[in-house]
Image (tube, rainbow, N blue to C red; front, side, top):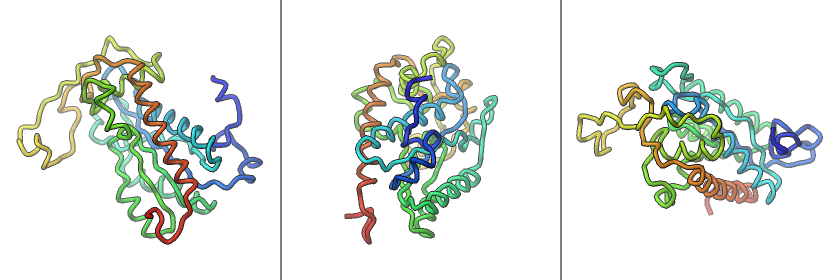
Length: 262
């Protein structure tokens, strides 16, 4: 347990209390969402839950120092994993069930006066865009979606040497930086996959859902070799700097007739 875990953090809903909450006006709530699934053979099943929790907490802590009106909710651990169910103990919830949970959380936050909500997503199978469109049509709440692993995409090739779609160099590097004790590098697969047989799918102008069990036997799309804690830390630092800045700007922005436009 770290020193941070042993103190009251007003930016963390699970550790603050009514005394502190009643003295604050929270402008922005962050709702992290992860997944429980296989990540190659060497990374923990909780990879998406663990790294998303870290990113959310760190970003809210950084933003709090500048605006003191951001609150971080506990991470929802489960995500949409129907196409990974061939791998033991993958936990799947439907998008409908996940949407219902997130919607109820958002409506609860609105009851308490919070109209700016950021869904910090840590799993590629979760698709919240239709939900956000409907919520912003039905209510006066503004919901923003951030797939955290995409935030530094423009700098990706400056940090990593191999592409990562699932459990490759980037995710392994992040794990090495955050929880190296949970990694077993010697059992990792190489992430090679069977390609689509149709050129349209290979080129990307036709898409389909991928059944991961048909790709390879280790639930990975991307080679983890070359991963390092240094690479992971650089990417995490970049991502957290950008997200925390957005949270600060969002908290300090007034909701008017044109929000979030100029």
